[in-house]
Length: 225
Length: 225
DNA sequence: CCTACCGATCGGTAGG
DNA sequence: CCTACCGATCGGTAGG
Image (cartoon, rainbow over all chains, first blue to last red; front, top):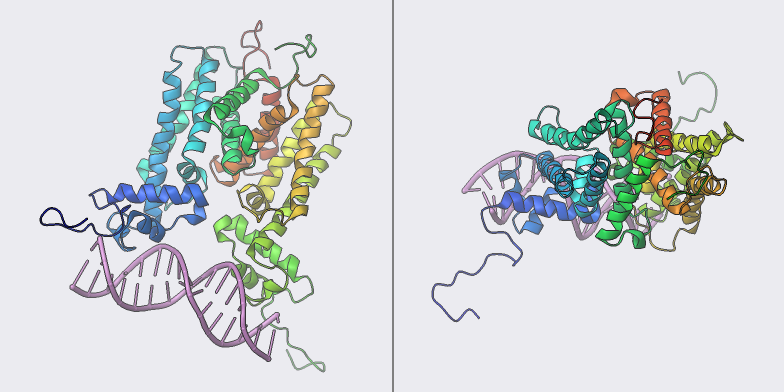
């Protein structure tokens, strides 16, 4: 194997090591793998370093401490969440705002499941040294505004009931957040949410239910739909 | 201080130690304190033992390992959750089933906030050695049935739209679960949910919204409520 | 980027 | 119920 060719440089460490320049991103990826598999308590700088194939002191070249790695993951997560919702919205651009609210909900749940590591870090109650990560706060606000702007538009255009946009947004947010959480924490029977299509249908059906109401419509007792 | 009286037995250890017989429950209480404050990763047998005022080997007299403590907390949590919802239901016995669904939702959110430690353990994705904690599974099923039976009754009586009870239940569950999670993970502005009355109003308003629908009623464009 | 080290904490066991 | 110990892991730093 090593006999052919001249000037052979044996690859250092194992094959999965990231010897290229982007250790920072490699550490984020490693952290995500730990998070998705074992939850927040499985994330450690040392384990991430090991996964990336470097010594446990190397991460400190890129992150001042563990909190900084967590913050970097969270910021990336917010941006991906925003993009995920916007991608769903782009696929139904121009449609009724109720349709678009559902699309955002579908994107939110898809993100939770497909980026469980990011999702747990973002919303898992991590506390950061205040004022230390301004771009993180900005990214979080941007993600919230995707939903919030949709709801505002719906209220203004008369397609959603009048009310405080933040209150209506919180209702919609709670529903998709709860569904996402229940799925990744395995509190929903796995068979119900095994495929992306199943999860899409579930998220869309539930947000539709929120829009139309759980109660039977008065006057048309229990027959419609 | 020690001079008066005869045969004085100095109290062992610190004042907060539980020297009475119920170390088992004391350890559960200690574990809950750790969980509520620092999340799942803050729970350790050793820290719980220290809080209870015993050596770190003592817990093994009552729990075969850490998982057993977690399972005990989870089971107690499910029973408290069931009772919490039933207490809310008892306060509106005989009322319309829509009112009772809201009451169960209020109870669920109240439990999440007031028993954050229990709540995190129950739904935090802890995995148990399969088949090892049958009473835990039973307690979980009982809690789920409170909501599920209500929804079934609502469908049967025609007050809720026709449909799969499990599907409608999941929608309601997701909403209150999401709200509870967002609150305890501090993703809702604290000022909005500082008091029990605020949280009650929020939970009730949101479940009402789910019942009545987020969409404006057709034919009565943007004016009612 | 490394090795080597620090003090702290963890789950769990031995042995009494 | 205790002390004493095990091996493992953690965040972080020194020094190169």
